[in-house]
Length: 372
Image 1: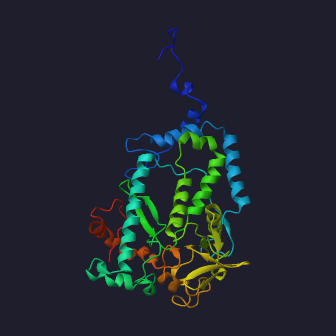
Image 2: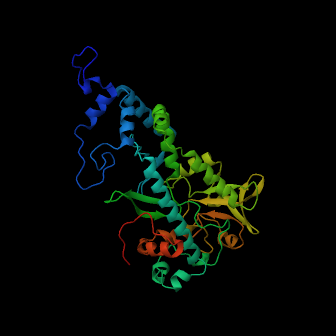
Image 3: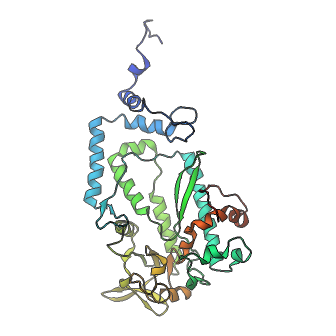
């Protein structure tokens, strides 16, 4: 281009803002691997627009400012005690927060959300049949051995209609980008899904450290999800002002921090099995003022540990008599005991046909290849 005076201008790179030059420097050696979907580089070889916007805004910050904000996020995690414990660990670890988030654009997110919602609806319908009429097994849609052979299928729950009307109040899926560029399901989480509390903490930490960046990117808020989840649990109870508890195995649980975080954020009582007792047809919480009725129990205790009278007799984590209270519709348990049977990898191979049978549509999200 030539300027008003007719003289040749400087190169495009020299006219670029400092942030743009920094971004170009960061990514100049980035190479998209052939034949493999890439989150940053699209099929046409150009950066995906959502990542280009992110790096353009991110690179506008000075290196010192970026370092300071990262340090602030890490310091918050330490001071707030955001921890977890991996299987086999004897002590807690600080939650490993990635400084750079995974960014999903709006169109991609809508497809992902629709696929997860469809899958949750399908699993809900399958659970209702397995613990109800049992037509899917009787008619050969699911092999009986795939259900009876699962330790998560609880015969004691068979025939019990879930109080509140649902088996799954919270569903999660492990997902990854498949070789075709679509999102694939790696595994279903229907027992007592973890992760929502850590996702909330991740968002709080990064949104505070990079508040302007979050505003400029128009990031989808997570608060509406938690509000809807809390409202749905309240609506499942049989009185207007229900008392809701989050049942935790206790402070030695691998994800106890998350249990405490969710209970505090949602306004639920954080309870252990010893805090609860059966009286009549109801579950009650022990207080200094006596027993108080508990209407909904969001559990983070595995199904077979919930009632030593009818499930695992060695459990000290549950509430004796809980299953009988469920039979009498005296408490809503989320997720319903026995829902973990849908995590069995053996069932993955049958889900496409079950989706066409029960929903009259194809499964939106593929999953890893599985054979019976």
